[in-house]
Amino acid sequence: MIDRSLNIDLRNGTPSSYEKLYSLTADRLKNYCKIFLKDHVLVEDMVQNAYVRLWEKRALIKQDKSVESFLFTIVRNQCLNYLRDEKLASDQFSIDEYTWSELQLLYQIDFSGEEDKLLEELLFEALNEAIKQLPERQNQVIVKCKIKGKKQQDVADELGISLKAVEKNLTKAKRNLRENLLSRFPELTFLIWILLK
Image 1: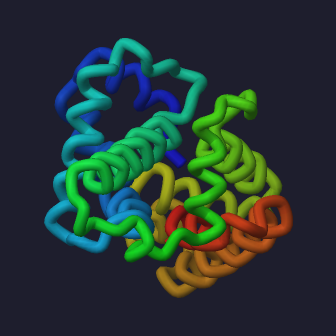
Image 2: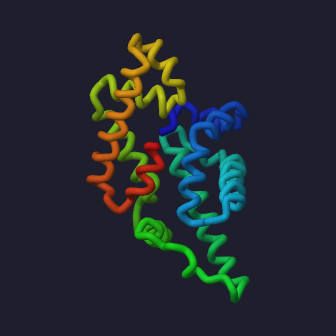
């Protein structure tokens, strides 16, 4: 749900663009990482490493592609690689200790390259389409609050509506987006919840 104009600054390595990206995505990335890993310190490390990796690969950032899906993919790959390496390095480590949900299995299958697009990318594209289908006021509020990262009071002032109206439209927009996405991706309930938190 990143404004694509931000991608140019990210590609150019503008420090403020990475600060903005972090503020918009860090919490969701950490929640996503917790699907795979139980150690909170390790989760923090994985997420920090994802931003470092994005910086190193910034030349690959395209204006018309979701940088969020790129970050989610980096985190997912790091987590699965970590779990694989731990399993190989320790006889005491058991992959069975982790709860491998349908979501995790889908992401493992995604490594096969049989899909033209990563599941993350498909989900973000569907999310953008769903946002466009929202009623005008819900669209305005979700874009300003969640995509542009503005405070709800600032959005209320900008749109000339009450704070309560902003909260109401935001709640309705999230509910409509969840319904739309879950009808298309019923197996991705947890990730959809993270995206729309």
